Image 1: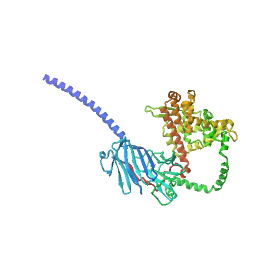
Image 2: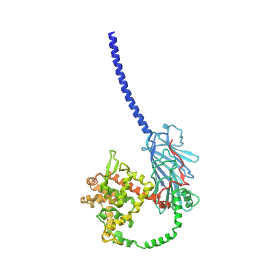
Image 3: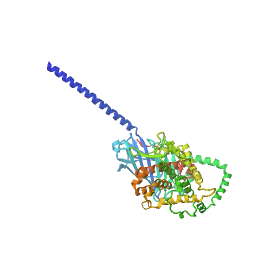
Length: 572
């Protein structure tokens, strides 16, 4: 019996240990289960199209090679598909899909009822009575970066007076709604501009612009309903393309249909009403304008620079107007050398960084952070700088850290876009005010000191553009490197100058700017994007340019008569 009691005690002790172990493992199991559920729920929430980047390369025969890059994350469905309807005589062929450098197998016949596993690594075209769908398997849930390529015939149409393209490139009703989309249209051996083309955008809030010989339609707000899309209409002069696809009628007839219920049409109607009461005033102003245009370029150059021709101005190492950007911008604008207001805004940002009003840093993931320092330093700003600073500060939100797209989103609002546009409209007035205050301009013309500084604006640009930095710029000039880069940004050559300064002495570069060349590249990219947001805001306000087809803001409404597109697409 004693042995039995000992055995019972031993067994009880073992049972207790066993129960303790079970409780311990149960807790571990519950923790693992909880973390798994949390991870699953977190993953399930990620169902988004972050970006769509469409590049359309037009050939002389009017066909197009289309490349689409889809940055997305999915948590449901077996495939992704794009809707292409309203095709007419357009034929879509040669579909190819890539991910992570791997090309998908293209099926001759696509069966959307196939399984998730079968569709993995496969793509195909599903032909329908009213068009087709471009399909490919998801392969897995989570993040994807799909590249899709295909050819479309007969994209460019021949009309009685012009050729045209009128295409919906991003369809409404995509699931999930895209956060951003960009469509870039270019040609094999041609630059598009306002002399040979006219452009309009429909279906989205954003812009459509001529950009270095390309047509770029860019959204500035996420799609939030089933009505948003990206439609581009372009008019081309005859002789650019040799398309055999014809449509009856004139381009004006097609344009009127597209303009129905659009912002462009509303603007035109308002202009017609306003102009009926302004005919006499317009005639008088025209007479004054003709009289003003009688002033020759040489007379302007003599007044502003003291020389008849700008090519007579030599190199200058002197920073113009003691580094004041506003008079320098005024001089450049008056002689047609300004380029883009984006350059001016970018230069202002770099100057604020130099003066410690903005600070540059990176986080643990090397993401660039542009922060606002104490308001005491900002109090030194006045006039145009202060207005620009206030807009940046307001756009930065509660954390006062300016994110890459914050200013773009802020300035996309109508009231804010008007503030930015007003600021740009007042830049010349600010410039002439600074010139007068500094004694550079008298009652009606530049003073001798003003002419010398105006020549420095041109000469300094030549110096930064043409001189070989490694040979011409000595270490004694390191103290001026920040000013060099600020004005290089104003001139639109900041990347070139930054690289040359780095090549002289990488250590001196880092000591001067407080960070290395790689971070500087990100700073320049950031400031350029900010400058582009300024230009886009002005474009939104200057609707007249958009209506005329010279580029500017897109119209959310209108766009009827397009080819391609349809409704739907995305995960299913």
